Length: 251
Figure 1 (cartoon, rainbow, N blue to C red):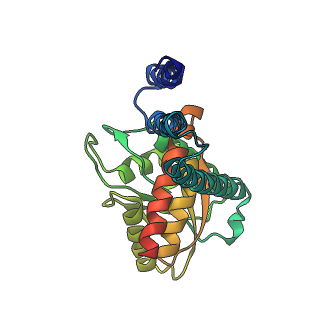
Figure 2 (figure 1 turned 135 degrees about the vertical axis):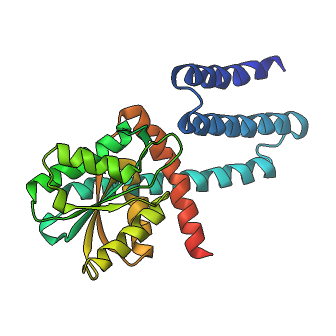
């Protein structure tokens, strides 16, 4: 048992340090789960060798194979997210008919940092392309004194976007509803099969475009920047969200 102590201590120290530095975030829990899984394989293998004197147990082989497949899928999905994010920097705005900015939470009536990054990215495009209409999409959630769309409209008008360009979608509470309701509003305003620029957070671009594709929306994505720690945490979380979306499509 003494020989196993360092194996236990090192992951525990890493997990404890991450929890102290960053709190119980999705990213920290993900790293912790990986360390625990690897530790479990190592311990099983050590016990197997000690009792049966064989190099690799069937259980350890199975767990290693499962873990290997998981890592491959994780690398593939994260690589695809980064690829689409880089590609979104070269969007041809001349081909865009309308912009949709997705909501991301308020503190009372003040946009959160995540929402501000989306509004900044959208504002830049709208100021450079003055003929483009914009749908600000987001309902009113817990802790919000007004719908997100209303706060987004106020922000855009304060930063040089004329009111007649802003279309409000004030009822949605999920990304799917954002896009579905925005599509309906654009159709009502005479936009038939429009090419949409979806403005969201950098880590969220791929999943937003996947949902838009489900709804038959011809779309491009543009991501607002996120702080490094937020980016790491949500890029990890997006893997599971995207896999869930893919699974729902298959089923």
